[in-house]
Length: 296
Image 1: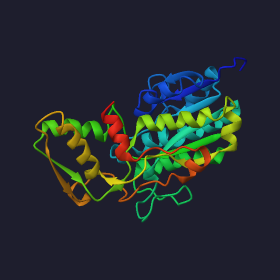
Image 2: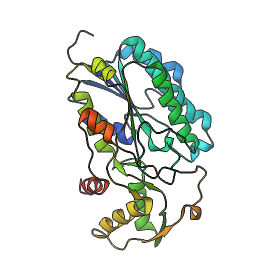
Image 3: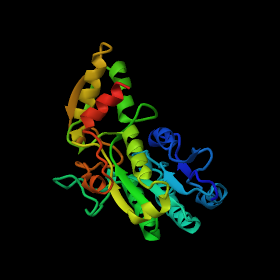
């Protein structure tokens, strides 16, 4: 590329993280933001020609099949988007001299750990979603080169479909809400994921491919602390009650009281030491982050 302003291809531009990335990446290069209508990763045969047309210096892949329960019914679709496409992106990026940043999930773990998961812990996903996301990680790592895999957890935002918005809606539609209180994890605001990503890219000082190649690997990027879905819902409803009344009464239940097609890990908090030590990035505690999101 002859232009001095690096071209960044953002995939999944209309998702929770992708939407925030459009803003945070804008000062770092010329952002080409594509939604599923422009590039459907389920059609992996279209990836090569798309990247050839755009010739990005960096690909940021925020696109994913994220319907955890539906993935049990559509494993082929989930694998195409989460498993096959990342490998094709990585190989095409390598051939074209581009770097790749890809997002993954805490659901690659089985939930049996007693402490936050580190990048060196062995993944053992319990459901199709986690299996396909792990397949995508493995495909990227097999290609190698200039790549970063950023695992995050319990992502929510101010748009789209997520736990925060669902709880706010149901709290005003129902008299009582039953929420699971024995699955532990860390809610992470999509805006902070995007800002953390931008901070990493900014450290490349324009040398995106070389810098990411030097730091290549998997990193955990989530907020600090841990809670249950019930604990997450409790703060959401408490804040909502300050602005509107009435709100639903919240009841804690075990996982057995809310069966789902896809099993979830009982504990999936992530240890963020590696990303802190490497890039100097530390996202705030989940309660602080939620407070910021709700006051936005």
